[in-house]
Length: 384
Ligand SMILES: Nc1ncnc2c1ncn2[C@@H]1O[C@H](COP(=O)(O)OP(=O)(O)OP(=O)(O)O)[C@@H](O)[C@H]1O
Image (tube, protein in one colour):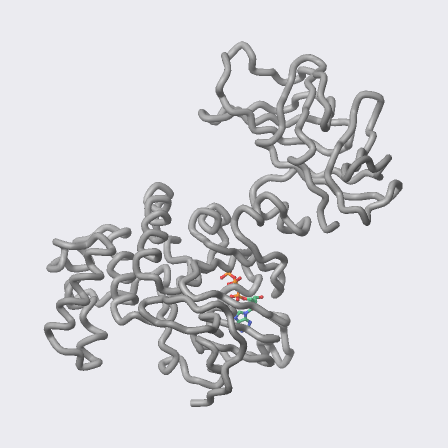
């Protein structure tokens, strides 16, 4: 096993009883090329990343962006073409997968069909020759955490998909790995069960205190469960932050478009007043957005605003912030909200989510002229 001097220090914390001054997982200048038909094709390009002890960390991005490759390099199933991988401050770049003390959970549960729940979860500990009483204690504890107490005698075919995934989780957690890697583990479940399991997974992670690295292309899933998210695109991290930071302040156009729905307008700054840029779009139409002092009048910027931040009016409003006029082209009733598409003079269609808190006669109809307003702090410039 190759080891190096401790890498660099972060505040001490504990995960599964482990105390260390290092990130649970760290990538330094990691690149991964795959050799395809004699040609090196980059899958991960220069990744620097530190995942804290006990963190629920998600890698989020579209198909082919390099999420699974990144995960496989943590597990040791792939070796980086360049750079180093550290676990708890220890250089594991050349260490075999079975010596890394990380476990993986996949979409397919890969349970032993001829073993019951108890036997499936005990299997790894028995192979490690852990004592019978200790196995019973640890298995009992983990089955309680994943809410499977009472199902010890069941076989795979006698359980629902969600229950099978809990067994797979219990089996992966029972020997207290340094980190648990989860690759789209809820992909096979239907929507309702998936949403239940998202909340359950977060609770389980909090209870066991083990670092979870979660791979998904589902932004809702990542926003619901993660402490932090790395949004990946074409082998690079586009943005790394808390769910709120990623959603409220997408750093790039890609992130703004990939996470939720964004309305984006590009226009020159007419003037800057007290930290707010005003983009005049017509006699009564303007966008008002906070900008840093470095943005001068005359510069074209892209401004983004989320659909739920916009108020829709059927008569011209008196508003201090942004005002746009437009025509409703689409009205879709969603139960909790009505979603409007509004064609505006900016050349972009705007999407507005209107909470259904008012009477049915207040709903605007297709073809109607409407006004959109939102507060300055609810829009932000992209990449400024
Ligand atoms: N073994 C391999 N050989 C050659 N190319 C590969 C191999 N594995 C992955 N790739 C390529 O590397 C890139 C990243 O793949 P990766 O599986 O990491 O993406 P992903 O984000 O996990 O995608 P998905 O969500 O579809 O699983 C893709 O372009 C993929 O085609």
